Image (tube, rainbow, N blue to C red; front, side, top):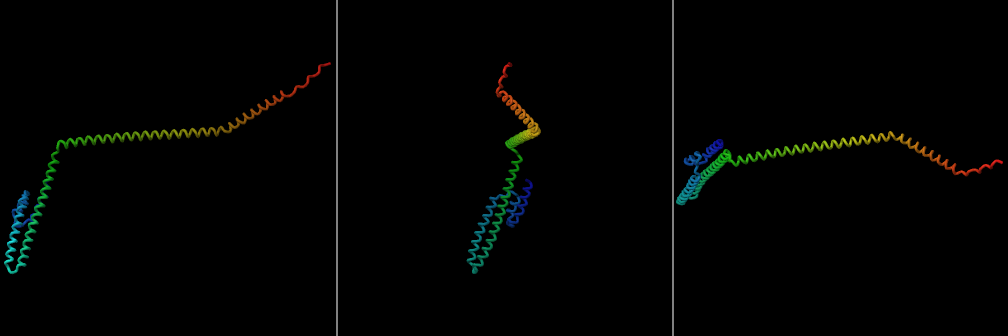
Length: 221
């Protein structure tokens, strides 16, 4: 805040040349930092009114002279110069007032910030508790996510191992069947041959039983 006041003082000093060089009261008010802006505006308004009245009197005197136009031109130029000087003073005063008003607002904000209200402290504690709870909630969610990911990874790994084991068992069974193929073929052929021999034996026996018996021999004489 001290830096701001120092900057404002520099700005006021820079505006002093803009004020009327012959108006010591206006300069004193500007440098004091306690400018009565209403009084300054009243002073400038009175100065402008006096200028207008003086200009009217001078114009009336011009009409009494032989060279009227040149007299009026001189009066207008003088009036324009004085009016511009009044406008510069008004602009400088408005700038000073704006800067002082801004400095006062900043000082009020600084004082307000330097004096925390109990409600502000309570709000700060509440936000701190809420933020801590939010951090804990996120940490718990992250932990659950990691556990779920680990469980899913373990399940997929177990499923992969089961598929690998089943495939290995299927390959082993296929190899065993391929190895047993010739032996099974020989066993089947032996069974077929045995069945064929058994069937032939039965047919032979049946054929023998079907032959007619020969007549008995005559009795001896």
